[in-house]
Amino acid sequence: GGGGGGGGGGEPGGRGGAGTGTRTGEGVAGEEEPIIALPAYPPGSEVEYFSPSEGRWMPGRVSVLVKEAPDSSGLPAFSYEVELSKTGEVRRNVSLEELRPAASEGEVEACHL
Figure 1 (cartoon, helix red, strand yellow):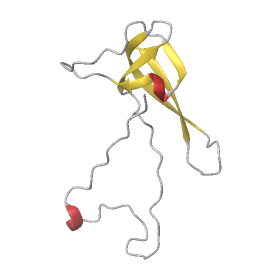
Figure 2 (cartoon, one colour):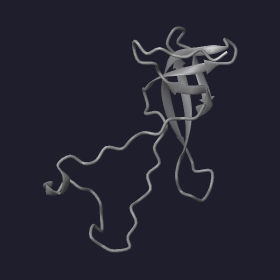
Figure 3 (cartoon, one colour):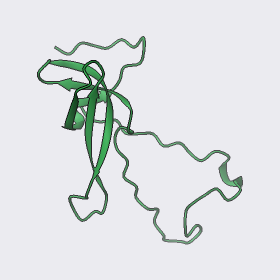
Figure 4 (spheres, one colour):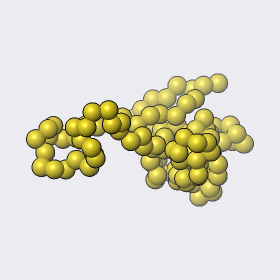
């Protein structure tokens, strides 16, 4: 199980940009970059949801809800919902262990029995 982490791309063009950066305090020593919390799956992503009642992975589309931070970190917590593609049913408060990225076309998956 386990959710996937998103890879972050660099800014195109390197250092020669025309003021497109949004960082504040650039060039100030000792200033930390802000920490940004991102959901494991972007809203609207095609995913597969493991249905305990069906005993198999089912295709769907994820929605992300932002909850208030459960601790003093100040970072938001996320709640996931999945709309199943075949039935249109919505599964609420889905854990990351029950989600995985949707298989690409032509991708061969191993069966886990």
